[in-house]
Image (cartoon, rainbow, N blue to C red):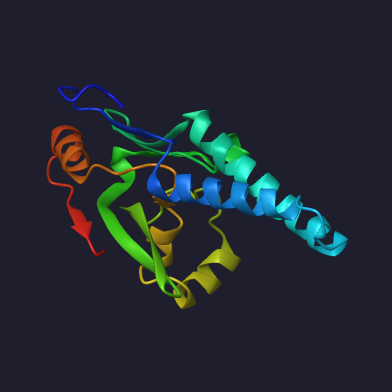
Length: 180
């Protein structure tokens, strides 16, 4: 992250509680699948899932790629580490009308998100299209426009105070709505 005195707010992928848990659980299951007497079908199905899944989560944490950045040019929505270049998007301040912090329920768990509400007519972002616009209203508690310009807080931490400070510095008057 930038220094605490800098108005720029930047969060990078790294180790958080959820990432550590997934990697540790994957390691335990991978080790268990290698014990003698485990059926071949369990190994064939489980090793790619847990072994590669755990390795991928470790890769995400170790990549230290930018997950989210607020600076003088606008907001960088860091992409999925597996396809970072294709899924990273920059939203200029002229297109932003608000920031939205929201939560998606997934069974007994939930995932927090940060996104931006954009002006009508703003250029499409990666993942935006007619199919997403048709499906998203049935899946998420925010408008589809906000959902496609949101990033899950998985593998990184959002400092709400520093976000609010950066927004106030670079774009006074743009609200930060906390719906979570």
